Length: 111
Length: 114
Image 1 (spheres, each protein chain N blue to C red):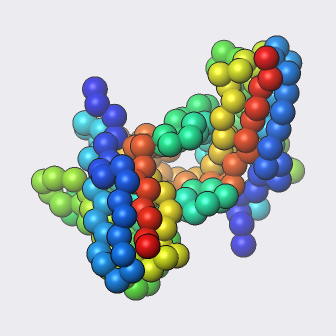
Image 2 (cartoon, chains in turn orange, brown):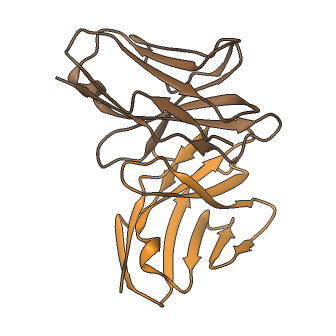
């Protein structure tokens, strides 16, 4: 039973355009959601997060949207840059402690 | 400020041998998490530790796997009698006291069982 799902294994966008990565979850007890970015042969790096009491959080080119009724969150990157090419993981947690990760979406930004 | 350190980065073991993976958290962090990533999959939670305590081991296989985070020294993930299915990347993450949400990951240890 996968509680966090990223249904698109890969996404390809043109440089300068918007990248939208999606994530669905099933556990309504999750109260904090995070996005991590991972390059090959490296550990994940925290990117941006959102609390369940908010519906939007923005940090520079990155914005995360949370739709609690749909149990859906998305990460928007605009404008996309070639250096954004990486695997993006959505994660969710219930209080402090372990995070539950999706399987990741590989983003490729073409110059 | 050094990040989370893991060693070794690569570990090759024959079936039946023991594997020991080490993790030194970021300075000031007392919470350590271990995750495993199998090929083509996401990170799966294994265990959450604080100094000298296992807080949550719900993701640990029941046999052959153990973890510790002693008062002094790094956290250790120990796999006894390794099998081919244990081949994976093992990531350690840490977080500071009072803030368990954002986790800071190490570069991982890639275990290959031959």
